[in-house]
Length: 159
Image (cartoon, rainbow, N blue to C red):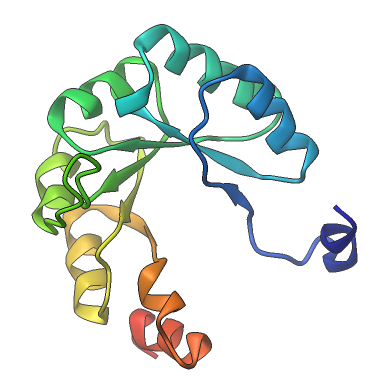
């Protein structure tokens, strides 16, 4: 928390990327300074998803609701998700299919901000997802493996 205070208001958004399944974790995320948290549709029933989504909003956070298939996208739309992350990695077998974002983006409401998650390794991938309707990408592994993460970010955004 002290490190967050040192950064002040000029800091990147903080996402609590965890397996959130209990309201206590939502309070904990907010208290720790998170701006958002991850709600994985695959591990939550509709009641828990709706409850955690509502609580997050009450506390001033818009959760990133993660989906990987059409049923999960339908459920996310059903609870009123506004920020949806389409995970290109299937959590059951860990295979990556970049076409997942393209297929599922067509099922989202027009007012939903879509983020492409997983498997993003090039500027071409970023452009592919932008063309499919994603307004954001979440990049992890490509940055963790980069010798110069700042240069890698510039490469991904095409600068």
